[in-house]
Image (cartoon, rainbow, N blue to C red):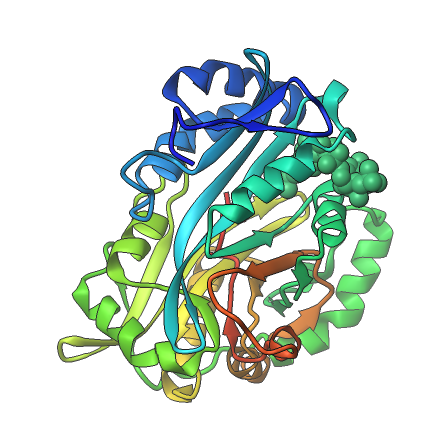
Length: 361
Ligand SMILES: CC(C)(COP(=O)(O)OP(=O)(O)OC[C@H]1O[C@@H](n2cnc3c(N)ncnc32)[C@H](O)[C@@H]1OP(=O)(O)O)[C@@H](O)C(=O)NCCC(=O)NCCS
C-alpha cells in the first residue's frame, strides 16, 4: 500500500489506522522504539536505520516497507521489514523478513500486533521471521505461520574456556574447564587447508556467478548475489565483517563471513554466513579451517554458527563443531506460490544462517 493510499480501518480498535511509513513519522517512531526497546537499542537502531531500510537494494522505489499504526495522529505501533529475493523450489519470489515490530505498551494485547502482521503479510510474496521475542513468537503461532525453527546452532570449542557459563560460579566453571580439556584438545585441533582461502573486502561479480551455480542445491534460501552481499556484509555502518573466499581463476568457489566478539565469559568468533556447493567438501572444509585459524589468531575460546542446511552441518560436525540448543526461532509463510503440504517438514536443503534477517546486529 503506497503512502497516501487508503488507510486500513481496524475492527478491533476503531480509531486506529495502518499506513505506509512517511519520512515525517521518523521522530515519533524513534520515541516509540525508545519506550519499547530501551535507549541503547534505539541508538543502535538509529545508527543502522538508513542502511537497513533505505539502502537495501531490494527496497522499492516508493520507500521502505514499514507500516505504522496511528491512533488519530499518534503513532502507536510499527512493523518494519527487510525485503529480499527468496529462492524457492527453483524460482525466485519477492519476500521479506519482519523486524522491529512494536506496539506501545498501553496498547498491547488489543489486536494491533495482529493487524500489523497481516498488513505486512498481504504485501509480500513470503513473510519470514527469525529470532523472535516470546510475544511475537506466540503471535506468529496464533496466526499459523509455519514454525520451521529453531535455526540449528553449532559450536566449535577452541580452548577450555569454551564451556564457561555466566550463570555458573567460578569454581564450577574451573571444574568444567578441567574436565573438558582433553575433549577440547581433540576437536579443537588445527586441520590442514585443502584449498587456500583469501581475505577480501567486497563481493565482485564472481559471487553472483557462484550463487547462480549453487542455488539449485538449495530448496529455499535468500538470493545471495553480489549486490545483496555487499549491502549486507560490506556496507553495514556499525559492524565490520571479515570475509574470505576460495577462488579458482576468475571464479569463486565459496566464501565465509565472520567476526570476533567479546562475551561476558570469553571471546567468540561468529561464523555468520557461508556459501559454497554443500557437496564441495574440500572448499567448505578449507573455509572452516580458515575460520579456525582466524579465531585462534584472535584468541577466541569458541566458534559459534547457525546453519540449517544438513550438508553444511555435516561438514561442520566433521570439522569439530557440535550442535547445541538453539533459541533462534524461524517462521515462514509463502504467499506467492503454492507449496506441497509437507514442504515445511523437510528443511534439510534450506540454507539459512545467522547472516539472514537482521539477527547479527
Ligand atoms: C509483539 C507485539 C508487537 C505484539 O503486539 P500486540 O498488539 O500486543 O499483539 P496482539 O494484541 O495482536 O496479540 C495477539 C497475540 O499475540 C500473542 N501475544 C502478544 N503479546 C504476548 C505476550 N506478552 N505474551 C504472550 N503472548 C503474547 C498472543 O497469542 C496474543 O493473542 P491473545 O491476546 O489472544 O492471547 C507487542 O507485544 C510488542 O510490542 N512487544 C514488545 C516488542 C517486541 O517484543 N517485539 C518483537 C521483537 S521480535
